[in-house]
Amino acid sequence: MLSHEDVLNEFRAAGALLEGHFILSSGLHSPRYLQCARVLMDPKRAERLCRDLAERVRASGFGQIDIVASPAMGGVVVGYEMARQMGVDSVFFERVDGKLVLRRGFTIPKGARVLMVEDIVTTGLSSRECIEGIAAEGGVTVAAACLINRSGGKADVGVPLFALTQLEVPTFPADQIPADLAKMPAVKPGSRNLVK
Image 1: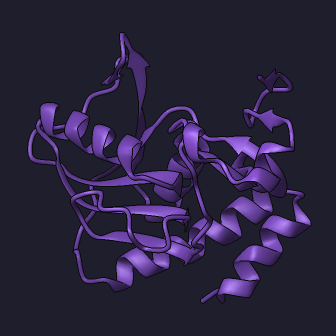
Image 2 (image 1 turned 135 degrees about the vertical axis):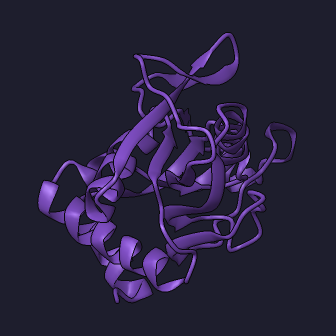
């Protein structure tokens, strides 16, 4: 199995471990950002990371997984590769009118044993929303998995959560940003726009 340093070295090699002032999708601010799109753009690296994560899930004793489900956008590639590693189908939920739903003809069979997969878990909010969507479709989420749990293990997604590694990266509400971080321009990852 990959060690903590092995995983971080994969992110470093891909230029996916960023330092600066970032506004996360949760609205929180952070001095570090993990750009999973960069680490997953290399198919061999994605395969290596997801193979290790799939082995961890299999070794957990949760039994058969029937389908992998992920929230778009960040979970799509990692969810697909996890499904490929496990020999099952992959579906993804998209946000429509503020709610995660299946589209594109995707379905989850009633009673299907589902593995919910994300790229990064910070607060666990999108994971919990995806798990709610799985339940609404009649699936049973038996576990969740992500490449990196950046909550340091504090995020509760409602089911056992497997990660290649954990990081405890500080996050701050907009009204509690430390002075040194506030001096840097804030960037929303995935965009080139500075946020004022």
